[in-house]
Image (cartoon, rainbow, N blue to C red; front, side, top):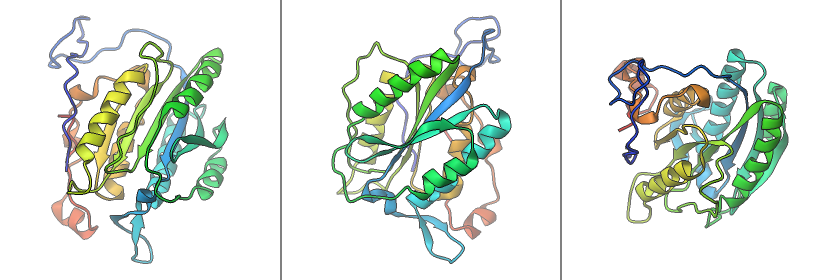
Length: 268
């Protein structure tokens, strides 16, 4: 299942500096590229324990939370291979956000220790993002003082609970990316409505271009989407202008053997 991301009415910048329809070659204005402080906020609602279409070494299906932990480790190792000066911290989202590891660090061992202590709770009901944004804004000011920028990557797992927040539209101090893991639509859930709410939230708070992806599939698709989020916020085109389908083609036989449906990436 793929959800449509609402149109934002923005064309990408072409080589001649004009706003185009996306047919031109993408160009970046000369600017300083800052190292990132990346705050992962992981949903620990009971829905994070839903099994995904990926089997672990024992043959048992992995839960969303187990796949999230593996994907975050992949992301951090890849990000540090690009620039070892990026740093990472962790928070959890139940009814609201709380710190899991407040200190930003480039040490992979510190990440492993933080993820080892990550566990799900009972069903949380509401999801208020206001405190998460307060934490992020406070940390963003400290990052800026060190010539760094802050990004929040929210991993959200609830198929029928739309997140809400109270945040002023004129305070865009950090970039927000969202990875949304959900069930198929049904009588008891409405993932499209949740997705739409997440898109609205991203555009309300994000300083640079924020990306949002969703999946109800397995670990491979999750890794694919997080690979795109490796891109630096100061070097991004708009998500609607991305076309990387040629990078994701795989043999249907190989995908079927791994128990995952083949889902092409699309920003439409």
